[in-house]
Image (cartoon, rainbow, N blue to C red):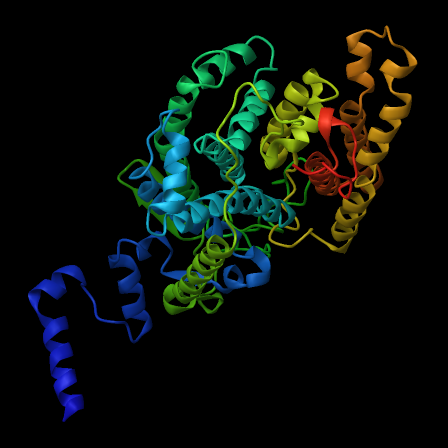
Length: 511
């Protein structure tokens, strides 16, 4: 009886016109219903109705792209709530932070979650980019989406950096002072860029207001726009990357042209995801005509419905991310030092942790650390898919066992180079051996320049030995990754007053 009453109530609720206007379909029970649900739901239609089984392997994507998106959503929600209790005014900002801690119900949890999600997003977006590189997912036709990913990483750094100042405590004030000083080193535009960021020559009310507007309006809008384009390109490029499959050797009696090659790889007829010989065609309002990119290459048995296989995984991943962020927010308070004091700088004044590698390089040479390395890093990352043209190994971690060995050797082999060069510079540096040395000599022989030269040399030697651009790219990227992490660790734990080398267990070593 109770069951029949419950069934009648459920039928009445789900069968009335109001419910039907909101939800066009009942919970699906077959593949057709599942695809209709995906197509007609605003949020679900962002993912394809069917997905390749390879895209669901946790060990392939590690879920890093989706985790980045969930962290951004958490940041938007918590950021909007924090705006109700914060005024970007130098005389009130710090006190608003204190009110969140002592006067606003769950205010400290809200601020903690926002702070830790921001740091987590910086790390996860970077790890997502590392995963895309090592699986060769930047290759044709996904070159531009890789460029979008690099831009999203830069915007994520900008989001975290602009939010760093808002608490208006000593940590925030002097971290931004150091960070904007690094931004002023590029010739011609550096000083202008610093004035535009700060609204003057010092960190004050103008800087707080500009960073606030950038943090809550300009950069989030830019990130949301690029994320939308990024996801759209993933769909239009055939979904997530996967191992290449042999194209059909002949279609309708025709034989693929063996001359269709790129500059460094095998014939496109051998490895192709979008075969140029498909019999399926499409038209677009008399504007475009061509072969269908996916129909011939993806067998139906290789795809499974996104509902529930993908949607359930997304739900579990979101709950997991939310649980981790909530746990961190409950047990670990975001740092908040005393009120910002422009007349009492800490020693050393350090940039945010993700810029400490650059600060370490800037300590030797403003030209190398503040201009050369950032410029080469950005240009080098963006140019990867336009240099490594061979599509072999796409969708496979490290391409092959040889690639895995190259990556491991460069990661471990580059790690001691940074500390070794820093030690040699401290005992046999150009300024020590030649006090009157020109600045050009110091820039050329400082640890940053030498480390950059050795990383490029490692990559060129790998290319010469293997004859593979992909292997050279793996060597270059792995060496850069190792050096980036090591320099960041040195700046965090091994730099004390006056930026001298200290051991972490020494008093005053960590700030």
